[in-house]
Image 1 (tube, protein in one colour):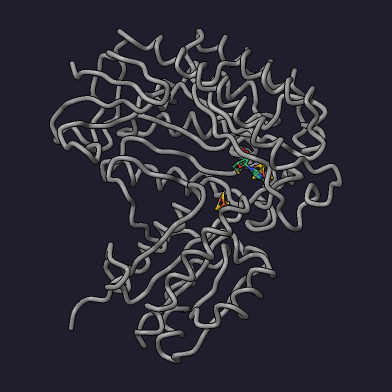
Image 2: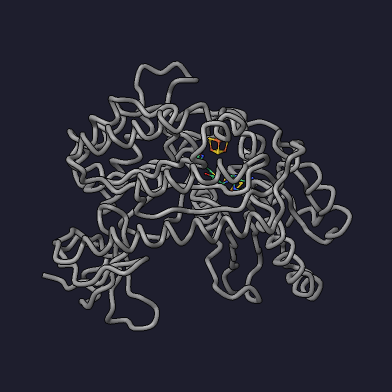
Length: 441
Ligand code: SAH
Ligand code: SF4
Ligand code: F3S
């Protein structure tokens, strides 16, 4: 009798990627091993994201494809979980249209996966178990990490901000912080096992510890991680401008391991729209933060962002303010999104929705400005020597390695595979719009 196999499909952000790593860790403890072939799997899990409408559509597409496989095998278990499952209308759709799904669970009870699988296997009946709210932070779960040399570490779960367009506070619940000693213990363990880069994860890392009344804040945590031997690079995601403290800005100056990069989502350049989005900062507040960050680092910090176009009520003048902000900041990279209506959020009810045509037209104008700023920034890297964490070889040609600079830029260069997982010096020979080319020194 062969080993049992699992196959996990993950949509969405790093939170979901990390949840999938934890599920993989639990499955391996149960004796399952990973397969890359769906047809070979004994359990298939789809970890879903609900951030925009196309995420929902992609999920139902993938689920539909599994029906034949499920029907042809009495033993295959199909499980669905993640953010979409925290919404009643999705559960209803699964019950009525995809009744053959074996197991449905949510974002708050992934730690129960082994028990849930055992119930489905032993009782051979369907199980839907979605919790409305988290019942405390669970520590000590195993995790099967994708990389040996870099790792995600959750520091907070959930979100309290209720930006009016966003589904996350409804799918992930209220913000909870892990205790600093648990976080530091985990990172020390990772360092001992060879991890060089950690990314501290939360929807808004800047409010770490506040809702839980800790006397350690996010900047304190960075200073503490900076002291851990073996860790060479610290990153974090995501940072909300309204809670970015001067103390954190100083950490960029003081902590040599803190990568000189910040992902600071602006969402829009117009204060009027920011107010309607409930972001709780103005255009001026945001630009002041960028100025402070650049001053504290002598200009040596890469800034990336998220932007939404076509939020309800966005006028051409509002949009022009976004464009002018992009020109002022000159981002190193940006995730750009068309506003997508999310059922249950306040903005879904706003009457002044923008047409798809205008959204697309604005989106294209915005991408042009962003791309030319990125090309200009990347050109300025030519001739520079950068420390690059080598992540792997590019798919097409295995002699071509790929890695990331401290500023998060992708660099491609020739090298040998033994460099994977190490930090090497690379001279940049060409700056393209979306990546750099270099040679190892
Ligand atoms: N907590 C992070 C964001 C997580 S969601 C933060 O506040 O920065 C990632 C990005 O998806 C958001 O920054 C936003 O730009 C985008 N997004 C969220 N909801 C959206 C929606 N309804 N339509 C379009 N983009 C959306
Ligand atoms: Fe969503 Fe806003 Fe929370 Fe980010 S801060 S997850 S955009 S509600
Ligand atoms: Fe998506 Fe949930 Fe992340 S909605 S973006 S997977 S928190």
